[in-house]
Every structure is written in C-alpha cells, then in structure tokens.
Image (cartoon, rainbow, N blue to C red; front, top):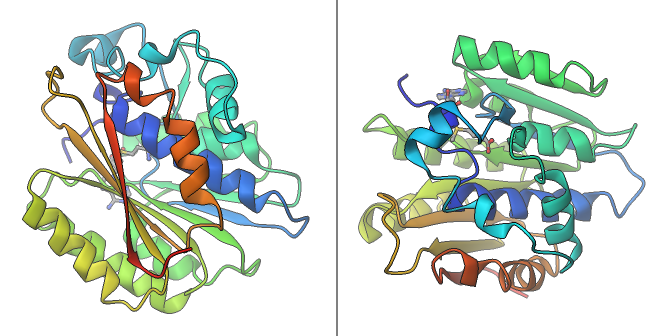
Amino acid sequence: MNYRHAYHAGNFADVAKHLALVSVVLHLRKKDAAFAVIDTHAGRGVYDLTGGEAVRTGEAEGGVAKLAGLQGGPSALSTYLDLTSARDAYPGSPLIAAKLLRPQDRLVAIEKHPEDAAVLAATLRPFRKARAETADGYARLIALLPPPERRAAILIDPPYEAGGEFSEAAGAVAGAIRRFATGIYLVWFPVKSPAGANGFCGEVLAAGARKVLRLDVTLGARSEERLTTAGLLIVNPPFGFETEMRDALAPVLPRLDDARADFTWLAGGE
Ligand SMILES: C[S@@+](CC[C@H](N)C(=O)[O-])C[C@H]1O[C@@H](n2cnc3c(N)ncnc32)[C@H](O)[C@@H]1O
C-alpha cells in the first residue's frame, strides 16, 4: 500500500467527488428518517494543503485553491465551499460526511493503512455518530449491507494502485448492489484509458443496477496533471442530482483550466 491521499487531497478529482458527496448527503437530509454513510476507503479525514505532501505535488493548487472567492451557487456548492474554506484543514470525504450528519444519522469510515487510520480515528472522535474502522473496506462493505436504516450513501474511493483493483472494485460494487439494491453508490475511478474505464463501468452495470449515471470531469488542455480525467459512477442518483451537479460545476469548471463535465446515463435516466 504505497498510495497516500495527502499528495492528492483537494485536487480537481476531490473537488468533483466531494461536491457529489455533499449533494447526495443533502438530499438524504431532506427526509427526517435516519440514513447511514459508508465510506469504504476513507483516508485520513483531514489534510493540511499549506505544507508537506500537498505542496510537493501542487495538486490542490490546481483544484480547490482555484475556487477561492467563489460564493453562492446551488446548496451543494455553497455547502462544499463553506466546509473547505480552511486551507490548513481540507476535509476528506469522512469529515465532510461527519459534519453533515444529524443526530439520527451515522457514518462508518473504513481505512486500511494503519497510520492514516489512526489520524482518521482522531479526526472523527468528536463526532458521536461517526465510527472509524481500521480494516479492508471491501470486506466491511459486504458485512455492513443492507444497513438497518435502509437509506444510505456509500462512497467507494479506492486508490487503484494495484493492477487488479479495477476488477476488485467492480466486483465489490456488484456484490454490494446485490445485497442493497436501493443504496446511493458513489464510485470513483480514474480514466487512464477509455477501454479500461468502460470495462469497469460495464462490470458494475452487469450487477443489474437500474439507474446509473456516469460523470467524467476532464481538465483543459493547459493542465499539467498526470491524471486529466476523473470518473464517478453514481448508482441510484437522487432525482435532480444531474441538474444540481451541472449547476454546481458551472462556475467551478472554468477555474479548473477550463475543465469539462460529461454526464452519461448508463442505465435508466430522468
Ligand atoms: C483515494 S484515497 C481516499 C480518499 C477519501 N475517500 C477522500 O475523498 O477524502 C484511498 C484510500 O484507501 C486506502 N485503502 C487502500 N486499500 C484499502 C482497502 N482495501 N480498504 C480500505 N482502505 C484502503 C488508502 O490507504 C487511501 O487512504
């Protein structure tokens, strides 16, 4: 396990992924009934973008740092901007979720790397309804489904550092969907080759999900990042999710080297 998210925190892929997470959690909060958030690859939970690893790659400079001064927009964007205003404490996905929980909701955040898991546990300690686990996210996901609340957002955000991780991730998502077909799944993936990404999406689709939206965010030609397209599969997106994400991304994309967002319904639609 060489991957450390501290080098990539706050980059353009995090911006798109975290906006989508905020949008989904705000949707779940529209009803009083409790919901669960399961974050299978949670990372440390908080990142100092002003020093260390973040400065060495400069990825946050090309991501969230470019949103400085942006205000308003749909609630997903304004909430994301509020949550990420401190450069020395950029919240990872589990901290974003923890901050949006109501008393009746809960978060389970799983991280395998012992050092990052220790920081995650400390980061989530103030949140009574958030639990950090040091474990394998894929195995725990299957054990945690279906959640008793029957309402859940599940973020699956692996590092894809090992050769077979596309298959492992697709298999885990497919298994999870079979156990809990009505969950809202956010599955991040890198688009390094169209064939690899399409194959991955095809494997997830084969699990039989009825509503699947794919969002690709591609940096503009001026970008010097190594990864220029970040993918997100949203299984069972809430009604209106695509419109909210289009509106949220509209003021964001021009600041990310004129990035582009492509939305494709792979199954179902609105
Ligand atoms: C892309 S990062 C997660 C970033 C985080 N979701 C966020 O948005 O802030 C992937 C994380 O997965 C962890 N990881 C790798 N393999 C894992 C596994 N099998 N189970 C749980 N965590 C794993 C890595 O240590 C790394 O911290």
